Image (cartoon, rainbow, N blue to C red; front, side, top):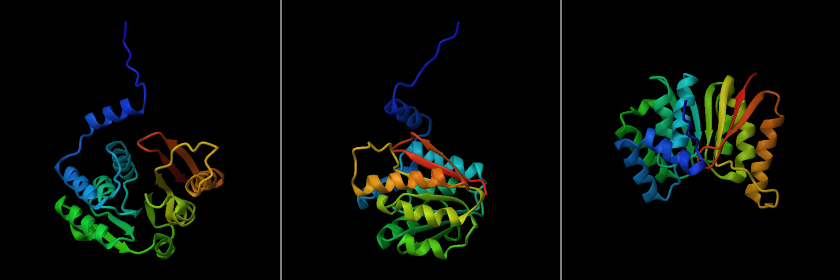
Length: 212
């Protein structure tokens, strides 16, 4: 006779992940820095997915929209190959200064990161089309459709784009953020170049793999 244990909800799953993948000293330091700056940061469950994807893809070139204090960037770097480069875009110079310090303190030399100060919708079109293994988007929700348009163009065949903070949106919601989330979900669903899925991790992750 066997016994089975079932998770009963997202909270239980979060507790399990935090128990299996606790923050180490470097992540605790970066999370503290993010809180001091008022930056939202990915939780351990989401961070674990980012490291896993970067490792599974053997990612050498990754783009991050929304640097914050470097929490998500640290997860991405830990999964990438040893000579991989993370390109991270943010509007706030203070955030990028904090992230740069976080990466160096965690043992990643400056050559492993390229921090670009600017509006992502202006920067993304200037990056190399088809030159990236993974794109992670964690920025203004109302701009997600634009990030999708430009981000998909950056993916090599087999690459993956990930959108953070994409929960199920009740039909009654008609605010700009809800409309943008519906639009980006529809766009990746209808794009024949992509295979999408939604992961109920943290506040929700929308992923799409480029098949061509």
